[in-house]
Image 1 (cartoon, protein in one colour):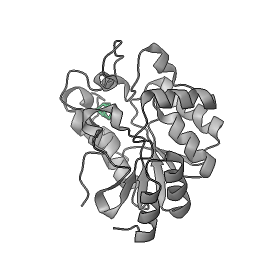
Image 2 (image 1 turned 45 degrees about the vertical axis):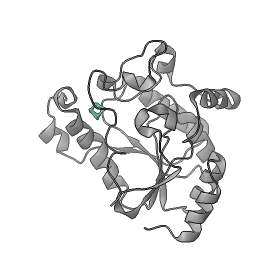
Image 3 (image 1 turned 90 degrees about the horizontal axis):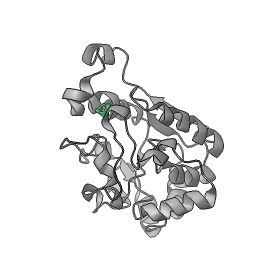
Image 4 (image 1 turned 60 degrees about the horizontal axis):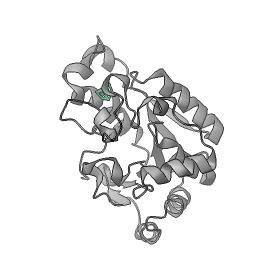
Length: 230
Ligand code: SF4
């Protein structure tokens, strides 16, 4: 465990109060913590709360090369509007795409390998200098996320912090409206959960939002949150 007991106690005391969790995390772990964001449909609230406390927090964006152009434009817009000063685009290591996915079609026949190449490995590399990371996961997003705590152990002795874990889609929507935050343009076109373009489809009214991700496949997570703490 890289985080001392005092900080862990403060995080625990913050409970599920997102602003307080972020205040403790971003002030007590300054320089040791990064925020990982997909700049997706529900990312704006977390980024806005974090920017209020520390607009220089490193924000890690997995630039897979497979995003919708709307996501790339939204990443720029949100960073500008919120004044985020350190958004980092993470790419696969040089030569890896050419070696392992020269046609750019790996997603179609081995999506786990594609996510490993474009997401898991670049994030592992980027996390080396950090002891903790902030995620935007919520319990309501998927059955696999229902038991998630605010603070959890992560590989390498790090911790993962999930400040918005108890927020519902309705609460997020209200907060976005209250703050007048820009919306991801694809949310207006039926995409409540947005990942890479080849692996995301719009969902019908009443459908689980995550059903638009890797539709028709057993896969439900990209892999960055799947491995257990070591
Ligand atoms: S979400 Fe799809 S395109 Fe993106 S890295 Fe994973 S498999 Fe590849």
